[in-house]
Length: 268
Length: 268
Image (cartoon, rainbow over all chains, first blue to last red; front, side, top):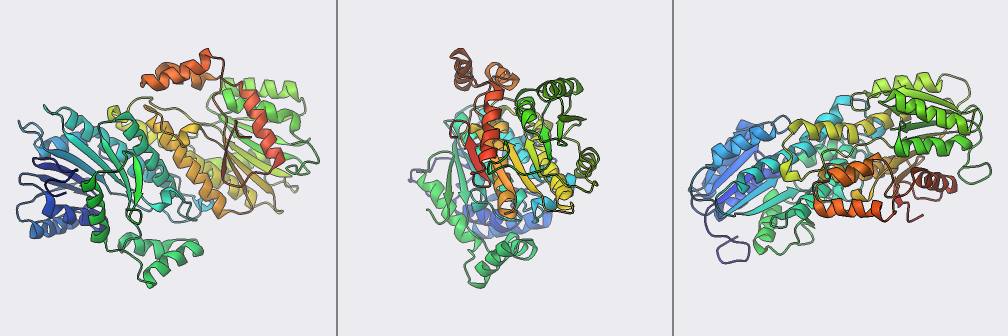
């Protein structure tokens, strides 16, 4: 997203990254660090202050001029009003000069119980899971669009959604995760249809070498799926998070995707 | 589902229909009424006792021998244990003779707020919506499969999910509904993959002449979509619920669908 390319916009950026304390979210922040124009604000949202502190240090090592702002918040319980207030406060939404562009990376998410649907006996778990993994995304989008649409000038807004192959194909014993990802894929297609001026992308980052993969290959109830996950690791096929994050940033920079489209790491 | 066809199974049936108090759920019950072998049990689940009483009367008028059991229950708050207890009690799960087949029709559902995602400012609404429209389905499946798998003999189980074109295509200002339906489509694909012995079908009943359509054509925020809904009515293109319900029962009787498949009224 360097100057002069089709996706670039003059002026500082406002960026929100959820799940910024580790893994792919932290990698997105690190990939963004060298690209941020002076005066940009990079807001990292997560539940872990320690993880956010680590991400802030990594970002500032890459670009000492980058402003990384840690927002410790539980997206499962944060209301639209909570999110809107936090965005306004930390982005300085009342200042006279709006940003050159505004981006949200919906990266936060959880795998949930990795067991067969017929064995889902914890009634509260599914509700809590979809609240974090679907509803919170709706709340953050509404808050972000409310803040950016209230600016005195029109701002280029990009909303990026981290998705998975599990949105397209069923994985045995991943019922919650597959359901949320398929639902979210549609959610962002609706968002794109409703808002032609927005740029909306669902990006599937590939099989990453992160904590989620450790959980996937050790806790998945179904042996077939567990074996697939284990062999990805054993055969060295897991991607470093930063490799996939940089590919995503390159796709955004080229800016040739169709709004609402699903793009996989291996497609691009 | 008359005797002799590929989908039929000897012995009485256990059937659960959610949202049985009106519209398509009531039509499924009425379509089933003449098909139920003696000794079958048809459980209608809904929040409205009055609606269930009407459905019971309609079923018994068609087949005076049919046993329709009204279960007044709010699926948004019912736990898996609540559902399991109700199923056991009303189906007589402890009796020595298991049913010939067991069917669940997941028909209950709501449209939710029919407004643009950017204007979703009620933080609790999305959580409540997905709890009713996704999580409750997981709870009922787990309860039903627990009850049927505990029977002394293997029982043919069919799980039917009422879906919509909105699972496949984005409808502006129907973000909640589209998201839930797309998520549920995947949920039932996972259920099918996990349980090869189950027969799982996602059936899209077409545009029905019911209360949900009235709401759709009057409350939809987006004018394009509202106009489409209105023209379906004006041009007489809405289907009577019983027509589509009978088509569904015919598909089940032929029993040639691939488990987990999405079939539309117009496909069959």
